Amino acid sequence: MDIDHAAPAIADLTVTIDAPLETIWRLHTDIGSWPRWNPGITSARLTTELEVGGVFEWQTAGLTITSTIGELAPMGRIAWGGPAHGIIGIHVWTFEPGAGGVVVRTRESWDGEPVRADPDGMRAGLTASLVDWLDALKAAAEGGTPV
Image (cartoon, rainbow, N blue to C red; front, side):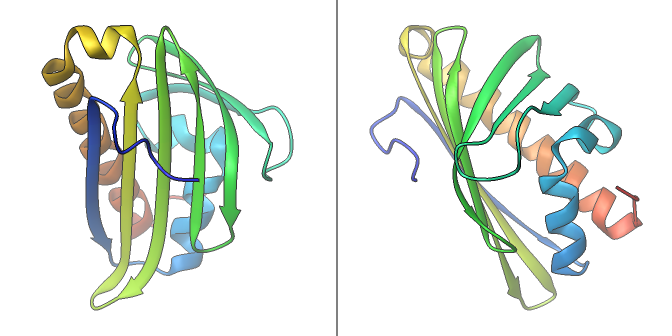
């Protein structure tokens, strides 16, 4: 599963986190814990198993989103996507050991009428939300936030 490279809004960001890969992966894939360490997410609930085809519901920025996991490689990669309020989002996360810690990369694409109506504004909003998510994940993992 990959992002839509032709979408009008794409963000591609990385951060290096000085924590064990297992800690970062556990924080990131315990979807129900997201609101405890990520202030941008107000609720999150995995409604099935964490597996390809699994579904979770979450709320962020006033949007209620239902996402379906399209790819899962434990300790390495997770991707999901789905529609939310006219926006088709595809989100891919990768986790790779590197110099100074684990390199976490997040890439997301948005398409749909609301995005095509304001691609620059939507891209800016998407980028800001992912910067905040990466900052929160880094703070939680390096600070030893329990899951």
